[in-house]
Image (tube, rainbow, N blue to C red; front, side):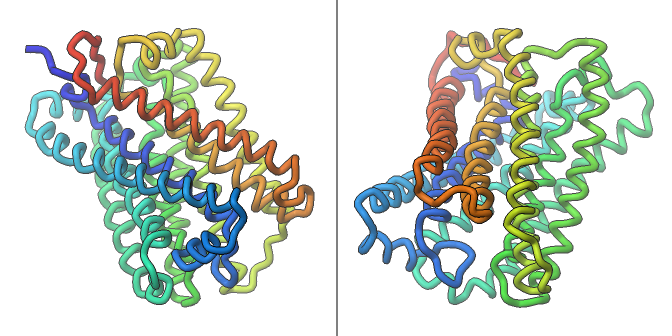
Length: 401
């Protein structure tokens, strides 16, 4: 009996459907973050948003309305696919396919679960800021619970990573180097980075020095762990790719460096804000601009490399436009979302703050339009992939890691 839809042949990579929707929630929050005035607060909250809705220009009111609808829509999808995946994963753990997965390179795809959990906590925090009146008055009480949640997810991620490394580093020959010809093994680094960025939020928002200190140290731990793991996975994978070429189905993983840069970049900016506000460390606008420019440079270079390989493999024709399906296709959403978010930061926290570009000038909108173009391209891709994988389509060719 064939599955009724591709998603019925389960892979932990389907957690990326939840992650992508969560990322799109963040892209809509960028409208509010940089366009809605929020005096004396690092982020806009319900009161700021609805005050601007009452007094702002028609263009700004429209942007806020679009942002609110976008946040509500994609948080719903984020949670919907997280719940679906958690249920499917519990059933999957009892199958022979799970036992086979645990003995292969693809064991690290399990790290898509803590990645998705961390993204959902971040997305729900945005929902709280935007839709819950008076939340900011009790936000200090929420930070310890948020950090406890990220710590629990981080411990879970480290346990899964430990299982994998313990197996491959103590039993020679069990890791298939010929199948290491992609950046699939960087998924654990992405999960650790998502935990780190969530852990860093109180550093940017709290006025309690103990909370800020714990946030700084906790986010640094998971951030550095992410960088170390990413470096090891990247260099060993590149060696394997040069020997064996890249595999068509895992080609989207070549773009995973792009979301990694955005997440670690936001973590660094949150940490810098906490260091400045609480511990009087000075970071200039010029330094922030150059940091963001460096991160964007890395993203563009890896993006160009990934697009070349995807084009040579004919990936888009097969898996995005065509009838073949692979759960790894969802890995294409995160890079576009990440570029959209980082470009918004580069324009507003970089170019505008450094005085190079005037806010809402022609140049400002030209660069911002690039970010919005990536955002809407990823929205179209999410709906396309959801239709492919979760719609009833018995004729599709199903491939799973």
